[in-house]
Length: 219
Image (tube, rainbow, N blue to C red; front, side, top):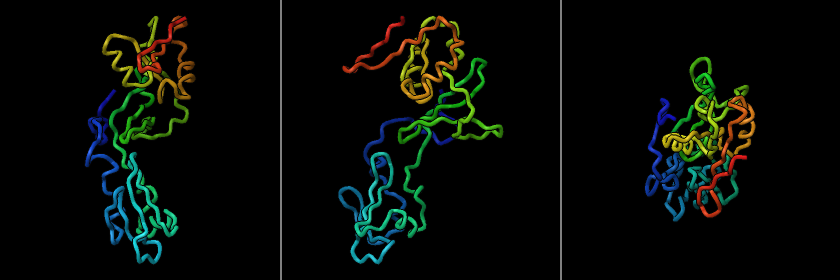
């Protein structure tokens, strides 16, 4: 796992107060007139129609998306176009928090799982030119920390790469699959590398209803 990848990096601490996405002022406000602060956001004159009384609501959602609503029923697309912006400009800015390398049995990097802030996860791979692409067409799905799993009698299957890394620091063999142990690719990734050994048991570690750690016993 790497905390840096050449991209902007942050510590992963919880955002509170003025640093929280919902409290940040969106860029569209600078392009509007008669902007006033309201309890949950801002009101301004709508640039998409002849607005004499501010009828445009702007606020930032918890995940950082900018929400725009004209009470005179102008579409968001018309409002954004009227100020020379794009719909993509309403999306939250993402920052890479951590990257997790998925290497094959020879140690060759196939792809990375990327954790972003606001919290989300994506997969990427390097192209022959050395840059990154989010398209994984034709890339073989493999379990996390694959080279270390060969020869292990029992391997703990956890929900994510961070959990796997934490168990490895305790001396326990652990893995996960791309986008988490419960993701649709989990079965494919596990099946793709049955070559680990026919005797290897994947023991799934999950959270019980009471929040306690539970393990599914090997057959």
